[in-house]
Image (cartoon, rainbow, N blue to C red; front, side):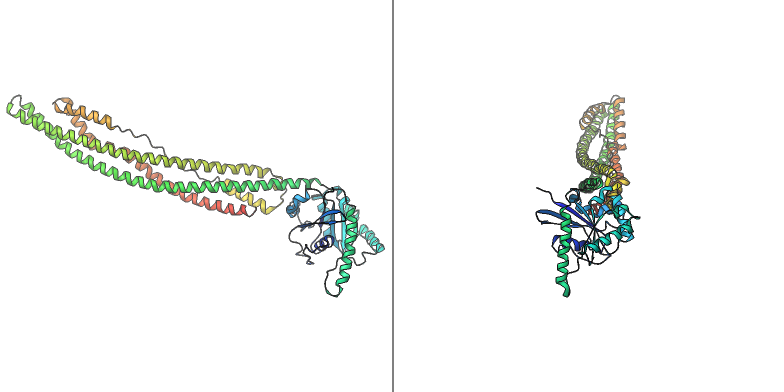
Length: 489
């Protein structure tokens, strides 16, 4: 079974390409317009069958413009790349009246830019609006005149086959005459097309389909990558927002715990001060009992009372301190869990942005961009890549890893029990334990770790809020990029 024959119509605006397409196909699918400026706005194709042969007529727009670059010409054929890649059986260069200098230049450009030296073997010049198109002598005379006039301008053009037709608009009192003229013109063109069996596949047009497919993959890859970045960036913003709120709540909670623990330690300090005073006074009386026995028992009682006060104060303080640290450590654990989620979201976001580097590499190596096929599409991809990779989006969030809190209530309880007995018996060791215990309470050393972490968290909180604002700005950029890419799909 013979494949469909592809017929490409080219020519300047207002020369009658769309009218000829309707005449050949016997339809009104192509919009006829005599405006030399407007013309066909988009390439269009339709299929039909004549005497057992299937044809596909492809009406083009703007490819016979000598002011266009190769890329711009190819961009006009982009919507029909799948058809053109099959090959062309004939190219119909449509003109009316005398061939203009602009048309000569356009033909030469097409021959060099997207076709090759064989183009004349597959090209036919169709002169429309030729009133005596049925007069063979008149047509032949015009051919000779045309070839003589163009021989010095373009040998290829001078050697190209020429046929003549007349396709007047079907309207007014001459409607029937116009219909008859069109029908005869159709027979002339179709008779000629029946002989066009060979397929013309110029190298650039064969590659063109591959260019389009590759660039469409780049567009789709950019779209998938930007959707991925959009998703992970949105996740990062949400994680960061939740993290900031939780961090503020934790700071407030730890501050309250610290204040409560501070009050408890003040109370312990006051109780231990009185207890140590009683112990020292009682020990002094007990020692005096060696020389003055009546004061030994009162001294022992006072010393024991002070010891019980200090021991009780230490036990309660250790319990309260343990409870405060338990809550504090719970806050640390929750904060670290959230920190891990935030860090993971940053890693995923960085990987998503990294995929754009693969797209950029493919874009820079694409023949489509090199040939400058469609400036608009190329600029969109280039701008998106520049916005995302040009200044390397700063999305990372740096969090300090808090040092492990060294707090052991068990060891403190053992130390307090041992020291309690040391304090009971008057000796240099008991006086040292009382001095160190008093100094430790006065220094509030157990609050330093909380204060250090709160200070670090407050500093990080300001940075995190600034980072949240920055990520929101980046998200706006990504949203704009996504809209630009969506227009290309």
